[in-house]
Length: 283
Ligand SMILES: [Zn+2]
Image 1 (cartoon, rainbow, N blue to C red):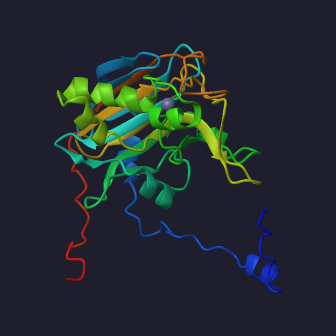
Image 2: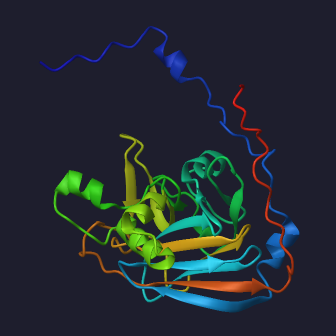
């Protein structure tokens, strides 16, 4: 027998009418230096590039103070980005805390924060040609930190079968190829991503995670200043522009270009210190 939902209390409307407060006001958050931000947009000298093939991932390395750019080439394409401290894979991008601090989607001036105990900026977004998009009528926006990454486990759970080119597997293979770690070890380092160029949100009526065709077009790019020495991995998602489906070979897919630049205007860059909490946890 279907359960009847509990009836609302007499003061339900009053309780719902309480105004929200921002969990983490960011006025005390260490902000990027505007001089460094401006400098990271000019005098860029290209040092390396990696073309990420469709439905595959590739690793790249960026030194602190260098800028890396992810560009859509050939056609609309979404990318799944992982970042690690190049000297210590246990310090990695923390999508959940970045979301708690900056919101569900990131753009110019926002920072990508690392995992505990370091909790420091790994990279700062210094340019984003899709910044104009804002938040659309469905509540959608671009470059989200709400999705996790497409993966073969959820695919198997929902649809069965063995699909090997989800971003999770692409990132795992790329990290194995770069580091020599066995697949099972590399897989443990793959983490929740920044969904570059992906247009997503939550439905207003059911609160479900949605995606829609990305507004990205060839030539659009997002630029990051590396705050620490980084190992990055980018997957060109099998969902293509993620307008229909992922975790299959159905969607048209395109490569993504990663370029690494020296930033002539910022000769020295001091990595931010690790977090100041003493880690005694009250004992
Ligand atoms: Zn994907």
